[in-house]
Image: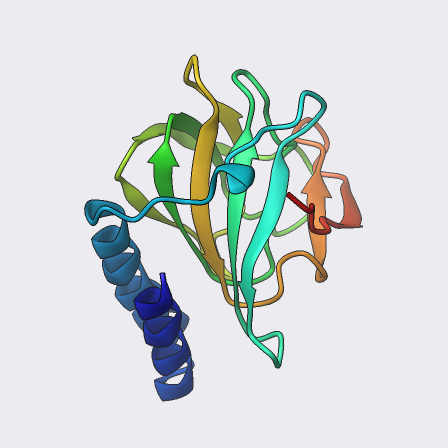
Length: 178
């Protein structure tokens, strides 16, 4: 994990191009998932009520963070945005991602497709121009993802969308403790 953290810090210090950052971070996260890296057991525990966000690392200046996100089987997120870039690697289980076009005005959201992400797979979940989705835990076991974001994702204001109307509410996701 320390190599990933060092690499992300170096990448973020080298460029502010979110497409270059997400490409390079995805490569590093894929390498981590291909290794024998194991999360501490307390970072793999789901909640019966909602998915949980455990912070692994928050850059001192808040410019990026790494989180372990854990869902119990069948749990889902509302349709939401991130307001920053992000890369997700599936540590265990699987997740179904439902993407929507980022709205440019009022009205229902436009679905853009679905993808199921399995253990070991990595995806760029978001850039500032493409970051509206919902996620469903699609396995019979907890779904665990390692998420790298271009902000302290637990403290920034983010959008929740009503997919039928496009109405936006703002929220702060927060952090959970193991």
